[in-house]
Length: 423
Ligand SMILES: O=c1ccn([C@@H]2O[C@H](COP(=O)(O)OP(=O)(O)O[C@H]3O[C@H](CO)[C@@H](O)[C@H](O)[C@H]3O)[C@@H](O)[C@H]2O)c(=O)[nH]1
Image 1: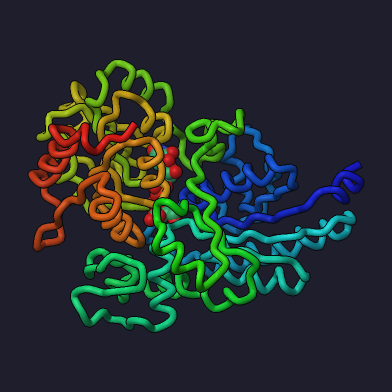
Image 2: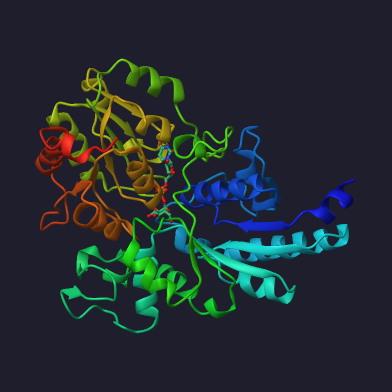
């Protein structure tokens, strides 16, 4: 039976890097492909499949044996060490799946791989299969790295501002941090550039963005490689409502406090809550965490703050007890439900690309406090290009002070709110 069905289906294999911010958009894209009648299999480590907690989707999950049973999640600090491990684990799994499909009598047509896993092209080519990288960040970011790859500029940056085709003038602190501070995460910068080595071998380059958002840069990239924007990969029920069952991301590596958050938000008036989250990887320093906590306290607004389990020890003593009247601190929340709740008037975010697209799609103005990687460039676009938020200022010690946080929140939540929120 499986053999007969397989013979009539076009089979696509999807290979995301197993991080929340990468799985979400690639799984969403997979669901869209499956809704068009394609058979889609998503390869991911066993430990991650377990975290699906029984939520079914139209996509088949193929668990790969994971040599790490610790259950520990990857953070910004540990990410560099994972590169080689991913390669060993996934290349074996990908080969195995392609061979198995062949033996069932139906062939894999295309491998859609996370652009930070570019060695997948070699495996696809060895088997005569098409290949397409999936960029989980913006076209602007993809263009900046491509310009560096082509040596239109070199590192360390020599000028205070960089001018690149189709992009706004970029200051040092607008650049992705792997570029502005190349010594910090050298192997991650290498990973970001590697995808361009074999671009001439791929069929498409999928990007989680949309043409209208980045018109000029998309047009420039189109003259270089076969880009296809397929974003924003927000669950359909928040956007076009074409896929009735597509209400959430279906896979969470963290346990969200759904009822607590929604009940708390229901009790608040329209536009009165600041939602604060720094995504799945960022880890603030203890002093910065304290400034943020005290900034929220000073702002005297209601706040819903996601502090991941691993970060809670950095909260100032008694902060939670002292702010119960105004704030709710949780270790993870259903972010889309939160952002679309009428009580939320502002999103204080690290400006990860998924969070940025979610805020843009749901019309929530932002206070942006970028931490690393692409977030600095996303912040530049949020503030100066799309004008849907403001970016905090960092002082000469590299700190965002409590006063600055209070000021920015009040600016977005106060008289400027109506101007920035687009329903
Ligand atoms: O309490 C929470 C917090 C977050 N999310 C979701 O988790 C995802 C987080 O993604 P993102 O905002 O992109 O942040 P990171 O997890 O930090 O993502 C990493 O991957 C992104 C895509 O490559 C990059 O843009 C970021 O810089 C990088 O840190 C989003 O879909 C959120 O909706 C929740 O569901 N609940």
